[in-house]
Image (tube, rainbow, N blue to C red; front, top):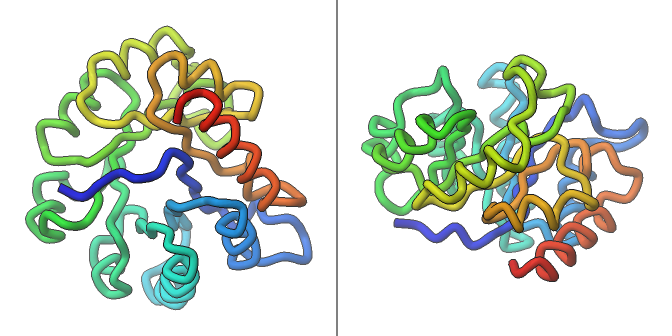
Length: 212
């Protein structure tokens, strides 16, 4: 089983990139700031649009020794030699993904309940994202925020690393780690920042101070 050797998980959204910059610019800056795991998650792009972007990100993440995971698209992950995939509720089942990817690539799974975390664990996932922990515009479809109590229950009942997702700010890192989170997953708190490298350094420093 591959090692989950990161605690800060950057998820892309090119629509949140500040004017005058590209997604590649932002990811490069984030990696310079210490990010070591990136999920390419541009769900509105077709495969032929995603492929060159994935290739660029694969080269970039290799340069910095960072993991690259592709949201949902196992074919693209294999095509660009990514480190794994991230699966959601409408993706191929985790067991099928594992049979295609083999034992060495990472599989992350989005979970919104304790039952979904347990299922991901049974089916061969390596880690899960859980949320939204706090209110965030990108996760309104999943209902009201889970909060720290439910996050704590999710982490306590999981054999997998649980990454807190949704509305995570620097001020909230200590709380989610205290609840048992193995790390944090972020979009806007890095992607939308004027200085993504500094934002990444801040989160990594806070995670280290909190015991990660």
